Image 1 (cartoon, one colour):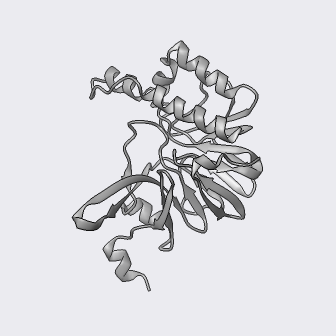
Image 2 (cartoon, rainbow, N blue to C red):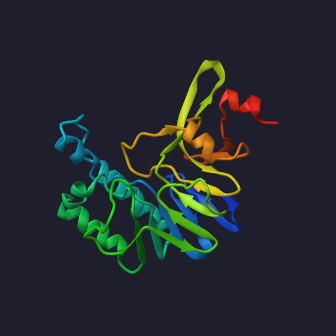
Length: 237
């Protein structure tokens, strides 16, 4: 099928697969009719309120599910993979209101749906779909957290990568981003109110090759060289 041209995607090749970064932070694989999202963190506002934390507007699930509905409608995906931390914790998954459960059920209807286990939502969840620690759809392997010794073709989430770019006039902009090199692809967080980790953080610098790119989400997504720490720049030939 053809993508809706209004989606303004960024196309790129990874491990031999032709993929598209969507403005929302979702990943689209047209040949497999596969849509991938990571770190929805549904129920985040409920969990924070339950634990006495900061009170957030209780609309993050509606915002996230609305965006996911739009991406599914535009791509007509026949398979969806949620790359872990789909719920902010197990109790948040159990506390989802009936309206949200019905919404998820409508999105799942007529398509294969895979929930990858995350560190926030390990183990089985009482929702339809397959529940897996990781999923292989060659040439890609989907898991929640990147592994340092992974083979080429690993797709993961977990770190909520963000990229800060300096602009003219001393201003700067920070955007959620995909990180991609020859071996691995890390997706941004898809959920609302999720925060993020700057891509010059040591853990991301250690995972990604010096030649990695950051694909900033937005309309349209924009690819730039992944910013490097100053000490790494000096050490890189």
